[in-house]
Image (cartoon, rainbow, N blue to C red; front, side, top):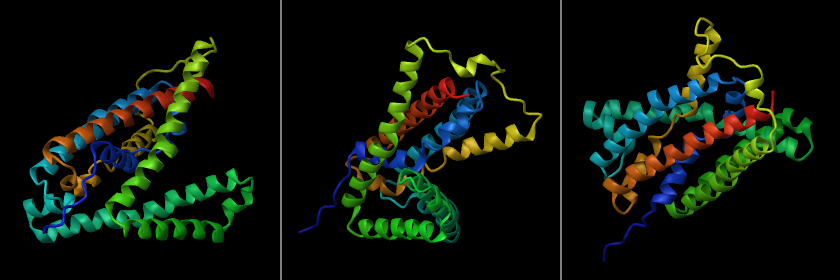
Length: 255
């Protein structure tokens, strides 16, 4: 008897896409730019996020058996370049994960009312290694366990706080409070004669990186050619909605 593979739903795959791309840490960075933040968001969305999502959806349905970036590059240029592509995707996580986990450790230190812990190397190392090993052990139990943790983490740690920020922004608006980003109105277009704006634009584009990673799970949905593109598009809408409205909400309240 052939063992049936556990399938994941569109909702779970959407949550996995959101987990890979969206982080609320980018909202204050966007909010402090004022009205130009709308240009940065639209530029990153239409030049990078949406095209990348469309390409990932097309390629994943072209080879629904899985493999992701490795499979795509291998089919085009051969196994050696496929290995290099997936190795580059892996090696960038060596620096990215410790960086973001050190941010988590610092946030946890302030949550525990112990700011001194944020500067403790031992505390940071324990948090980083603890999360690494915890994630590894959970993933060893299979896609069902890891997808449940991902879904729970995204809902409680990203979507719910993002919606709360947006809701409070609307409360501020309907209460008749002044919108801070309109107090000192600036041009919609940033000043690109300043190198800082160009560097910031690159950082905004980087905030949207990673939408293609879940292509390795395309074969684990019931109907890859239909379900994977749907999850990609749904994730893109949620990411853009929370990023744009969340940034505006913070920019409306804080100078």
